[in-house]
Image 1 (cartoon, helix red, strand yellow):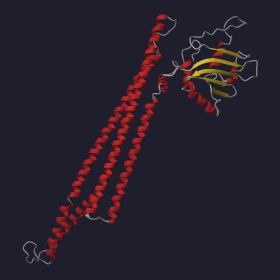
Image 2 (cartoon, one colour; image 1 turned 60 degrees about the horizontal axis):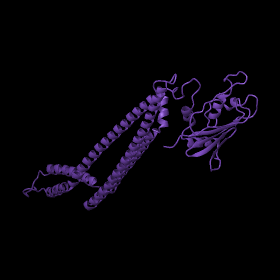
Image 3 (cartoon, helix red, strand yellow; image 1 turned 90 degrees about the horizontal axis):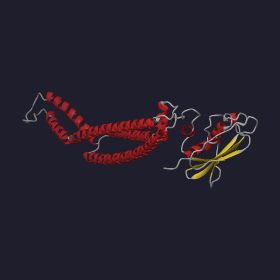
Image 4 (cartoon, helix red, strand yellow; image 1 turned 90 degrees about the vertical axis):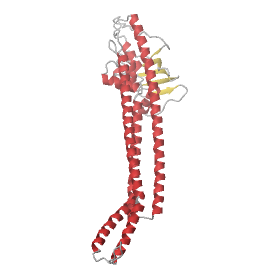
Length: 389
């Protein structure tokens, strides 16, 4: 884990109580005690300590006081502040006045619009201005900004801070991919219907051609099934990757909770006045972890339900294919019946009984019955041929 950003020095001019230029270098470790003395009253009020706090917040855009109010009361000079930070193993100088300047050690000053420079600060420090201010600033005789947030705001802040929202993004990407696959299936179904309509228009081919087309359809189906297997494998890999990332985040969070717990115990032993006996940050972190566990459990349940529905649909399709296959194979029997009826009709056309070969004056009724059977059998033959295609 990389070290957190560290403020190395702060300098400026024309700011609040400081008309003359000032510069302060800070140690690399330890605490800094800030004291001020008002030469007129002898007390600390009005000595400029608040102005210095504003100066620290000003370069990164965290100061809640507008620059017009930060200007020195007796000067028209625009307030300017420059701060040097140690960020990501490199020194970075941020100068904010009428313009914002960002200079990394060993590189040229960053060029771009004001918006691009603000985005560069977010990239360097790993979080936006609101998150930086919430984590670093606490007003005099007031709780930290994090503690003033509502429960929902705290959960949203911690989710963004611990980058747990990437799991939601991964779920959205998976849902989009599933939607794309569903669209592909719909396209294939439409193409199948179109091919069936064209086949019906041009007429049915012979049995050999129909069987060849059916074999080609089987081959295409096998390829599609292989594609489904490959997609399912990718989904499993993505799910495993998300699980590993989730476990890593939980482990990192557990370490932070233990650190905060040890710090609380140490502060309690030191008996610092007005120090809370419990840590809202710890409670909110535990609550956030529980909420993340519930959300991950819900995602797994939804994924299991989708798998169940997909397996059910595949079973239905396999059963339909089996029934259609049996239907297609019955065409030979129907053709044999058709040939037999046609022979019988030829005999009846000469008013001869097809059984005893004698003249039969009442053959018309039998002819009508056989013609009706022939129409029904022809319909079955056409349906079987269509299924084969």
